[in-house]
Length: 301
Length: 209
Image (cartoon, rainbow over all chains, first blue to last red; front, side, top):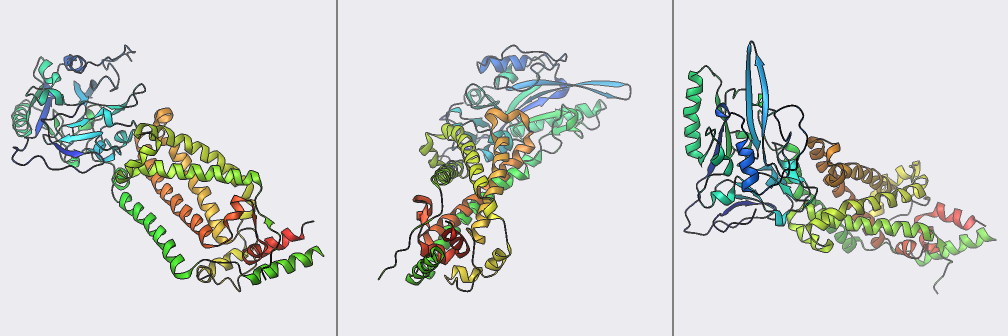
């Protein structure tokens, strides 16, 4: 939530980014791995997130399920989503820790019109810089996971920072630190993928034939990944998108439309100028005035 | 010897005030909208007091424009209905832009180009208003889905560019066709202007008691 000197930028909303200082070692991409099969739904991660980020989630209402709060809010940057998955005689309680996925190709950043309101560090973390945020809600339209929330109080957008302020000093995110079953791991993306591989082998040996890693290619992979028991059906997990990608509408709006629109306006202006220069103004002649006077006179007579 | 005909009244004071409220709000909307549309034009937000203020003001100016334009619409839509002369005029558009109006049909208060500007802006402003409400998250965020908001963003931007292009045509026509501007500043045009460009309308006007 503040620009951190030790983190170089890879992308910056509505602006181009100078490359990191020469001679500086390239940052290693990081990732958080959430092993859904090890989650017991205790919500320690939710609490740790509130604590570390000094957030205050007002007391609300429960809808009779374990989902509490029922959705992400400007204060709850992560929530546990509980799904009762019945198949045959079996019932599985699928508990997914929802929050920003830190897409490698972030739709929020692509959609953001305010320079520097959304940044992506070279380690892959996508961060909102509140100072620059204008509260337009474009990030909500850009996000394939429905994550950002706009505050009615501050008119700023909020979401998980992947504890960029902890990561920059070599600490794991607060949620990972708090998890009692180590269902949340944090490290380099490479290590996390390797670790997920072991977990998936283990799950398969226990009968979860479709166990797998959720690291969707539609957004060029994510820096928050899941180990899922049923990776063939991500949507089982409280509507986790099966194949997330930035909406083509956002692609058009933030892609071809921008240069084409300015070109069309420039062309129209240039056409007008050239028309005036080549054809000249359209003037009323003496003859027109005489005819008008004649007609006006005759009509009056 | 210069012939001075009596000026012909073209717009009432109320119509002119109505027009200029619309004009100013459209320019402010274009500036604030472009500021949020293209990063290279983000500096335009400074004209409105920064990004947050631009985001707050833009939709309210839109409401002013919509109400004001509705006034123009009700005043002028009857005069902008299409007729056979307009089709002939459009077929001779090449002569028109070459400043050769001889041989074209006598026209009422508006020519086909002006009518297209009128109907174009009418349709685009209606679409801009509708999509604008969908994008006005401060008050209306909960009424639509994210997919509807995405579609609205594209429609809003497309229509805005269309409206800006029509605005350029509208303003350029007033610069190009000399003697036009006084219609909207002082409310009247010269007899010669009316005779040259809107002869049928001129005959009606001078025929009035």
